[in-house]
Structure formats: C-alpha cells, structure tokens
Length: 257
Image (cartoon, rainbow, N blue to C red; front, side, top):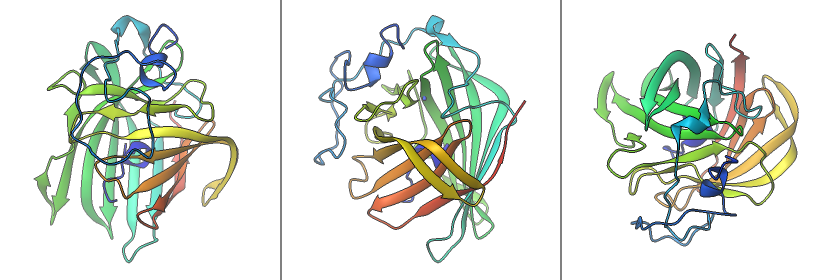
C-alpha cells in the first residue's frame, strides 16, 4: 500500500502482540540486520525482533478508524511536486490471502507517472482483536514501457526470515515507535507517532484529529516522511521532510460497503 507504508521513490494486541512491535515491550530473538545507518527511529528492540503472532488473535474485518480497509474502498492520491505527475490508486479488494495462517485482506496499489504504469502491488493486511493493523507482506512489480522489470521489495511474513509488523496501532500515542515490516535488506520500514491531534487540508477536504507518524527506512537513510492518518478515512497526506520534497495528497475517496 504505497501511500501508507512505502517510500520506494525516495507505504499491518493486547494479548502480548502489541508489545511485540511497539517500543514498550518487544520479544527478543536474534535477527541480525545489515543496515548500518544511525537510526532516526529506534523501535527499542536492538535488532532482535520476533513477534509471536497467533492466527487465533486475528479477526476478519479491518475497522481501525485510522486505517479502515473495507472491501470496495478506494483512495486516489497525486504528487505534482516534481517534474512529473505521480498518481497512486489504492483499492481494497474482496480477495483474501493466507499468510502465517492468518486470513489477510488484499489491497491493490498501482502507481502511474504521467499516465504510464510504474508499479503494481498487492499488499496483505490483517487486524488483531485489539484493533492493531498488521502488515503481512506484498507482491510488487515495477514496470518500464509496459513491461515488468523488477519484483524487488516483495516479501511475505513467515517466508525466508521475513516478519510481520504493525502499520497502525489501535491506540496510537505520541512516542510509540514500531516496525512496520521486517525482511532484512528488502523491507525495514519503521514508524513513530509524532502527533495525535493534527489538522490536514488536502484536495478532498479538511480533517482534524489526525494521527501523524514519522517514517524512516535504514535502507534509504537520507529520506524521512510524515504520514497523516485521518479518522474514518486513512492516509490523507504524505510529506517528505528530509531527502526530498515530495507531497502526496488525497484527491478522491470512496468508502466500501
């Protein structure tokens, strides 16, 4: 879900699960990272991250107010900050995928630049009983001249050492830091809550009570982003605060049924 967890140009428990991904309590095991950059965000696990995910602790519906993923919902974003116009369309499909024994919601995310397909991704999300939304992997392809040229960045939790992360907490609080994904050398996004009552003005409308996260990836250490999650909608704005000047705004939003 590029507009909610990926920065490729530069976007998923009470029961002992939340603490596994958030700074306050992380289950430890050895999972060495190849990244050497000084951390902008520290999830507090020292690189030893191993969430004990139990499929029985997950539910079918994703209704977290800051990231509601109802089948049929559709978001359209645009970034005109550069020389080209980038358009991102995110659609919650009715498909499901089994990941680590969890029935995940499949979200399709397509990126076009000046009308030409650049990236096509299927993301997998699931919500636990406490309302935390976990990110379980993605199947992504980059395109040039209509042809797929790379699947780099694809990963699946439970395969080849990849681990799930949290994309949105049930009750985000300022200072909470967590891993959104963990596949060494491919997917290492981190997030930290920096505001919980912000405002955001974008083409589709004005929003208050917005949760803002700072997001950083040690594989792209020069880039830092802020993402704005509006209650009842999800991501409405994404701004690069270091390493670039990108600004991705929500143009259209249709809720599913």
